[in-house]
Image 1: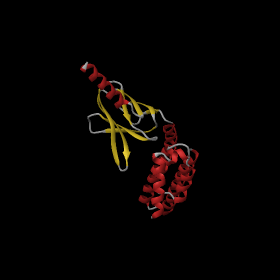
Image 2: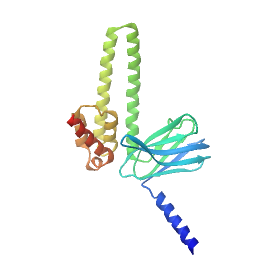
Image 3: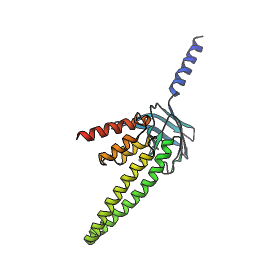
Image 4: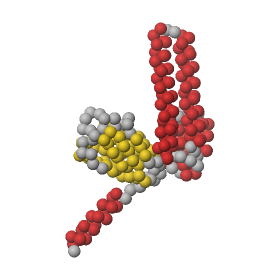
Amino acid sequence: MKNTVFVLLLAILFSCGKNKDLTVKVDVKGLKKGTIYLKKAQDTTILTVDSLIVHGEEPIELYSELDSPEVFFLQLDKNSKEDEVITFFAEKGITEVSTNVKNFGLDAKIKGSKQQVALEEYMEVMSRFNDRNLNLIKERFDALKTNDSALIRSNEKAKNALLKNKYLYTVNFAMKNNDNEVAPYIVLTEIADAQIKWLDTVNNALTPKVKESKYGKKLEDFIAERKKS
């Protein structure tokens, strides 16, 4: 009888331990040995919320509590000098991540939340802005080497125009996705130093649900602090 009660208690404890808001199912092709960490940002600290030591290509599931949609990080420690990270936006339920051990971060495919879909759409455009910015940096370096003042001035104008376009695109994207938690997130992470009027424009357009989310509250607090200074 005591053994039966003990087994039942263990079963209850185990089920409670796995009854989390978020389940992350991970498939890493070619992974024979390593540790997978599920992490998230808490203020200025990165916290590990779950982890699993992997031996062979076994099913990987990680869990976390989740009040509202937010960004998580999957980190792979392959017992080498290089740790790789996958960033993704998750909501309550199941998020599936598939990748391979060779290109853990680059080849990651993520299926789960509407926030992740919107984030991927946004980051695809941002990658083009970043590519153009790298080209401008190279052009400026070449202009400085040859002391070409006209090219330097032209480069500076192009750089300012690119930055303005990036900010305007981000504001417009956030406005278009005002019912998605990705909106306050990209404002905080990509254009936090924009003019207050643009931050206010996005903040005022957010739906009540998004305003009450983790990043909605952070944006509200951030704007309040900016206005004090």
